[in-house]
Length: 131
Image 1 (cartoon, rainbow, N blue to C red):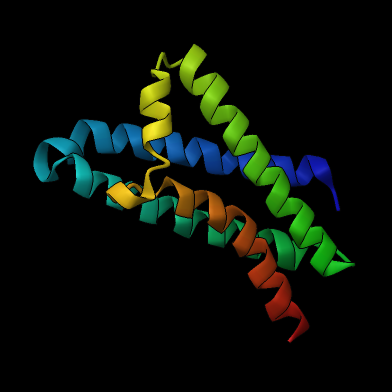
Image 2: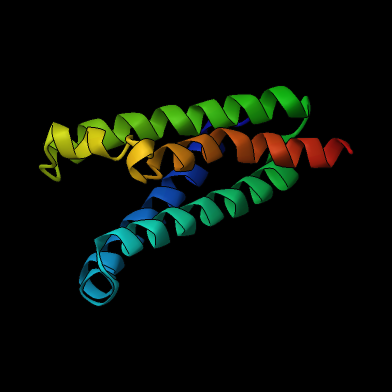
């Protein structure tokens, strides 16, 4: 496994998520509302994660595939949580309440599914590669 390559994939996904968030804030929320925009942003980034995982696992991961996929997923998950809380709070100025609110899946917030997809997607494509 190449940690720098896995990190680059994660970084590209973050850039896409930020651009998508700006798009949603400027264009979608005024038209479809906050919650519908949240659903769109969550679905979009999950699709991006699965596409990125497919490309990474099939072209860059190398054997042993399962352990590489698990390590990649855990790296992406860790980077996302660290980025969200430190960068989100200290750079973007989001309150801790706002950051933690996205974890309330029982209130319809889907951020936990996005994070779960960061681990599940590489494992899924590693499994497909072995099948």
